[in-house]
Image (tube, rainbow, N blue to C red; front, top):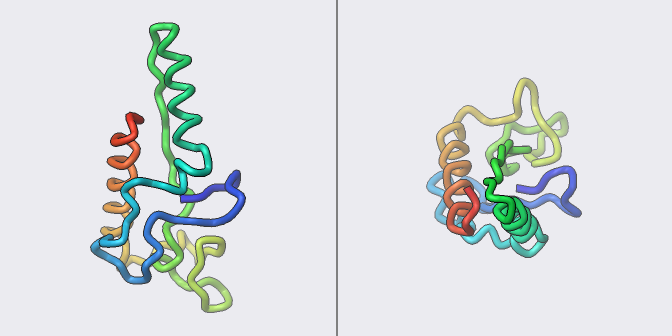
Length: 112
């Protein structure tokens, strides 16, 4: 998913109510195209030159808007959150699967 540093909001499954994540982008194309994956791989290579390994910590910014409770205006969005945490309880399991798929996608790029 996008973060504060991204030029726009995006996620890897923008198909509303896709609880099975049939439309999840396992290539994480947006992170490849915006330079995130290449930057991490370049950092890994530099660290490896020193016989070290790069450790990463990933923290999700937001689930896709369709997984969240509606905000104050009654709209589901990645950029607005309902209290307390914004995630619709019906989407806890799909959100966990989403994060697992994201980790697997990064591993497929040699990051993990």
